[in-house]
Length: 412
Image (cartoon, rainbow, N blue to C red; front, top):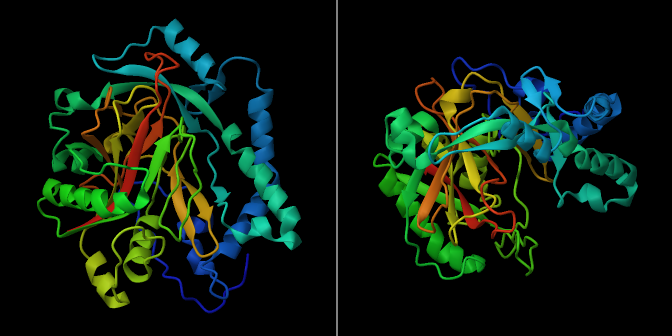
């Protein structure tokens, strides 16, 4: 690990949900910012940890265990998994698994490696440093092997529009977000070109902020801070341009069960936005440290909202409800930039995870999922987790999902 230098990064204490197990994380769950050296926000320590994990060889041994298992099902401590989507789908059909009306049974990809993981982002300077080429090669190979740490498991996915039939509450209410971490809103946007980042910021961001203030009557402020476009068939320029506040276009879908934030990063990301405007594509914030402390001393939450450009046919977005995994430890994935270490989460399979989707989601239907909530006493959902998936009930050549996902904070 790097030694400690002059610390400028804000380091949160770990605040897990009451009754939840300790996370599977480096440093006992403590943020890498606590290992800051010469103003690097702990990024050097995070890269050291990633290289140390590679050197131990445990990841390679684990991948070999999966690769060398006999053909067919792979038995894990959580249940039977499969190396390919087709194998899992064959199992679903052979076992006669059924979903309720509006639902579907799908192979979902979960990690089966119950250790922290590392992702050194493409903008990190290590990729362009000739003196660190050997280290970069090791990191690149490790990241290419990330997908080999996961398996497909069968899951029932229910129709979110019918949540009231099973959960006794409407999915279009804040109570659904409090209890399940999942909600559905409606918006007829006036944005005409979602590929124009400037128009999205000027038109769509304020629409979403107002939607959130209307949806949560007790909210005092809402901030949209960035967005992503997903379109597998897009053939234009796709690269992100931070200076122009243009996120580019994603031509792939994240087909892995995950959440975008956790106990540390939910608060760190909020404070970065309020005090530094770090990677903020939305309204500039000008809070002092003391003002940010005061704002964050009250309840706040991070919510992702997804709006399709047209009726969703293939590669829908699916969400998992909080109560079904509230007692499960999350696995931290570290995203290492030059100026910060982000933390996302992954999860291992459980057969009783409560999954939802919105079949043929319409352009005015906005799916909402919680990524973080500052309330830790267990009285409300802390987050949902989510994934993309391939729908076997829709033709394989059907148009793939085209949508925008905005990331937000809501303050109370």
